[in-house]
Amino acid sequence: MAHHKSALKRIKQNKKKCLRNKHIRSTLRTFIKRVREAVEAKDATLAKEALQAAIPVIDKAASKGIIHSSNASRNVSRLSKLVNTLG
Image (cartoon, rainbow, N blue to C red; front, side, top):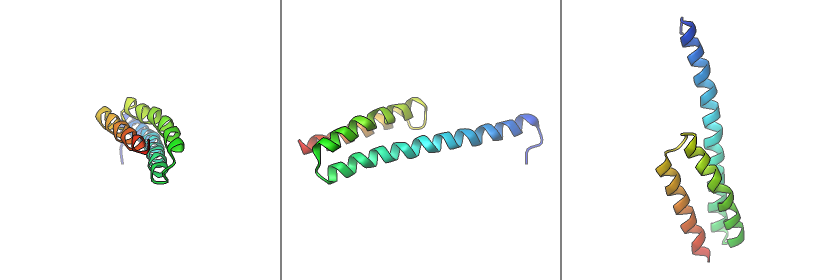
C-alpha cells in the first residue's frame, strides 16, 4: 500500500477514472450492438436510427481518449457500410 499522500491521491483518482472509462466503454459497446442487432433483424429504419444514436457516442469516446480516433472512424465506417447493405 502507498505511504505518501500524493500516491494515495493518485490511487483514488485512478479508481474514479477507471469507473468513468468503464461506463463509457460499456455504453459504447451497447450502442454498437444495437446497430448490429437491427441489421440482423433486417429492420432498415431501426438500423438507421440506431446508427444515428451510436455515432455521437463513438465520437465522444474517441474525444475522451477511451478509444483511438482511428478505432472510432473504423467503427463508424463499418457500421455505416452494414446499414447501407439493407438499402
